[in-house]
Length: 99
Image 1 (cartoon, rainbow, N blue to C red):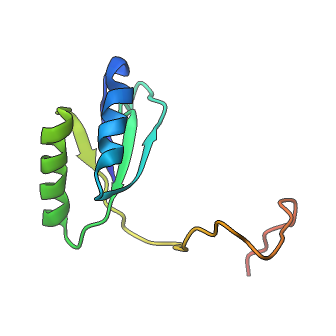
Image 2 (cartoon, one colour):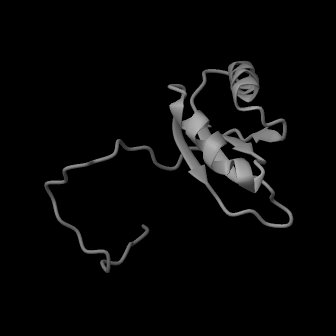
Image 3 (cartoon, rainbow, N blue to C red):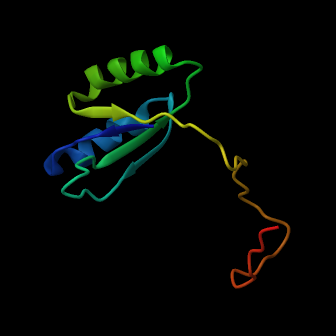
């Protein structure tokens, strides 16, 4: 994930540019905090740290945002494809039990 410190007045512009990259699977505006100034998050999938760093540099040149960080996943807890047309039903109030 690449997080970007985007000035408020450029969030719409930068978000649209990031969303147009085929390498970016997700792009979101997020709230900022005094200790976390990154307002736009984008997800990329790479095979190595070097590939991710190079991709971030290439994207940065296009969106012209100099302050960004790359956050690497350290552990995967769940990965499923999005189900747009779900055949089964579920109840949000059903308890989640952990064995």
